[in-house]
Structure formats: structure tokens, C-alpha cells
Image 1 (cartoon, one colour):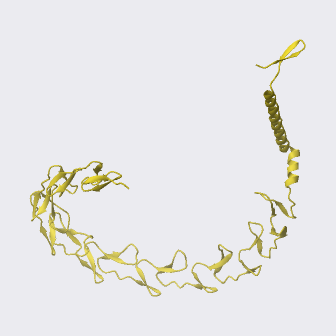
Image 2 (image 1 turned 90 degrees about the vertical axis):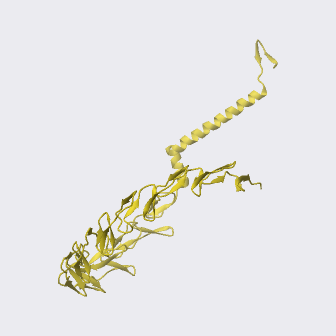
Image 3 (image 1 turned 60 degrees about the horizontal axis):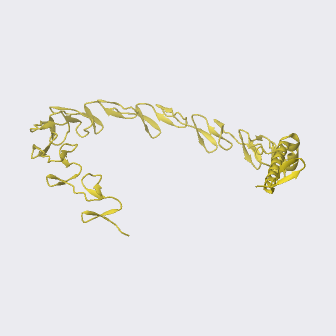
Length: 345
């Protein structure tokens, strides 16, 4: 309990020293915050801005302005920075200030030589063109640049200028022979191809020694571009034998194929070919036919041994692998003598 202090008629409880200390510290913090806020408001005011400008002001040289980004200054358009000054850019005749404003470029038809712009000579049948850097000239359509002049392109008979105008090509039905266009010799039973500069044989004919030779079709055959050597293939149910088509006689449990080679037949699913016949495939227990249908495999968890499927014996800490026909050990076990053994380091 705290003691009491007598002050005449009224009785007052005396405050301890610790409380007086806390009140004093709080008052100090409040005063500091008020001072910071007052300073911030003053800086945002016109007076504060003026003071800041005076502190951070940089003396600008003639023909300069404050940099748009960051601190410092930049020269006005048409002036170039040299040390701490802005010097006027000297633009020679037939030139203009570039987009940066501190350099110049020659006008169209002029080129830079010794800090000046000199007109370059454009020959007859040429004209000025713009390049990535400066200007240049090129020849008009039908002319080809040859040194410092434009040489006329000699277009032979039955030819025409290309789209670019710098070369020529022969018309359809003609082919280039040296500097001339010679007419194509199209043999009988032939026609111009898509390019117009070569020919192809009509259907039923094939090219041989510069001519179109008629394709001799044997009985039960049809024209085929896929068989280049002969130009024909055998119908379904027949197969090629020399220059003839012989009838295919499939065995039991077989069907005809379109293949132009081999026996011309194939065994049905679940059968395989053996000695010219189709033998039924014996699928053991826990086995199944493959997608091709001419072989079998063991199901998952079994492996093939001879003509049977034997169940896998998976040891403790092991599991069947991705193939489904063998096993591997779990981590951190390793396979050893048919078991999974934990390695000790």
C-alpha cells in the first residue's frame, strides 16, 4: 500500500516515480511525431518545394534542359553535348537533323564524304533507293546493274521478264538452251507437265528412251503408278509371277491380301503360317494373343517358360516391374540370390 499525503482539508494519494516517468516518455514521443508531421506538410507546401529546389538545383548551361529521367541535364534539339557545354550541330548542305537531334544524315540521293553530303551519280535507267544506312541506286525493270551503269537485259524470243525484272524465263512449252528458248519436243501420247517446261506420258503409257511406250497389261492386272518398274499390279486374289498374274489359293483359316508380293494371303487372328498352311496357336493358361494375333504372351505377374506361363515369385520388399514379367526390389533394397536385401553402409 502507498502512503497518504495530508494537504489541508483534502486527502490525495501520492503517485509513484515509475508512473511519472511513463507519462513523461509518452509526452516526448507525441511531441516528436507532431514535429515530423509538421515538417512533412511544410515540405509539400510551396515554401518547402522552393527550399528543396534551391538545395538540389543544378546550373544548366545555355541551350540545355533538365533530363526527363533521373538527375542532370540534356542539350536541346539541334545541340550536342561537349564536356559541360551544348554546342550547335553543324548540318552541312543537303543534310538534316536525325531523330535524336544531336546528329545529321544526308538527304535522299546524297552520300556522306568527309563530313559533307555529296550527290552520287545515278546512271541512265537507274533510280535512287533507300537503304538501311543512307541511299543507293538500282536499275529499272528490264535492266541489270553492271558496275556503274545499267545494262539492258536481252530477252530472247518466247521468253519473258521475271517478276523481279532482273532475269528472264522461257514461256510454257519452251526450255532454256544457252541464251535462247527452244520449243519442247513432246512425243506421242505425252503432255506438258505442271511446270510447262517438261512432259509426262499419258495414262497407260510410260517413258522409255525419250518416248511414251504403251504398258502391256496381263490378264487380271490394272494400271498402277506405285509400281514404276512395270506400271501395273495384280487384282485382289492374284499375285505377280514374272509378267503374269497367277491366281492365289489361300488355305483354310486364311484371307486374301492386297500385297503385290509374297503368297497373297495371310492367316486369320489366332493362327500362324506353317508349311503353306495356317496352324492354330495354342495359348496357355494365363496367356493371351498379341495385337498382331499371330503370337501369345503371358499376363502380368507371369513369365514365359517354354509353352507355359509360370507365376512370378516376388520376395518380401519386392514388386512386379513395368514389363509385368519380372520383379525388382523396393528402395533401399537390392536384389541378391532371389531375395531383396537391405544394404548396410
